[in-house]
Amino acid sequence: KIKWEKRISWTLAFLVCLAGAVCLFVPESEAAQIKRVQRGIANFDTDDVVSSVTLTYAVDQSKSIILVSPIGDSVNERRDQNYFFTGQFEANDAISIDRAGATNAAGVFWQVIEFADGVRVQRGISSMSAPATAPQNKNISLPITPIDTTKAVPIVQTRAAFTSSSQTHELVLLPSFPDSSTLQLTRYDVTGTKSTSIVWQVIEFQTDATVQTGTATIPTGNGENLAVPNK
Image (cartoon, rainbow, N blue to C red; front, side, top):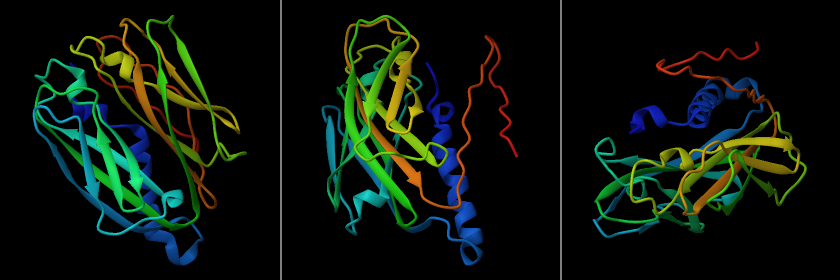
């Protein structure tokens, strides 16, 4: 079973680093500025599949992203449905956090990051069917185009009614931008028969940001690899 600590998205790490840079250089630049971060913990009882969270402050959804991270004993959990969550806006002052099934209690650490300016956020829902032949691609046409793919970051959350921990790989999707109007999601292994629900967000930084992307391979038996971005 993959430990949750090792499954933190590189996307989240990028956003944290970028936010730090913004705070350091705001006086000298016109970079995107964070207006407010709201956060908390949503607790799920054994049979809960959805939790509605009321925000303290209403936000501009076109400038806001939702991040979710599960809390609980996911290492010993035997059902992926209990610990994969997605987050969506119900309204400007409320979010909905969902999982596909429930047999264990769990918690979710959530954050809503709202930018004052300098960003454009698009979002939507989709799904990937199974069984399928791997690799499996899902092409999503973005509502607002074109985007600058050198300044855009995709955020992808998934959930599925998997009653075992042997299909975790099906919930891991690789996002990319094949062109300025399409978000492509790829999964490289499909062994089950149940569909996967997808919630996606694309945050595009308007100025003073450059996004570098690439791929890295982790050999069997090795726990890490190093990817060096261009200077």
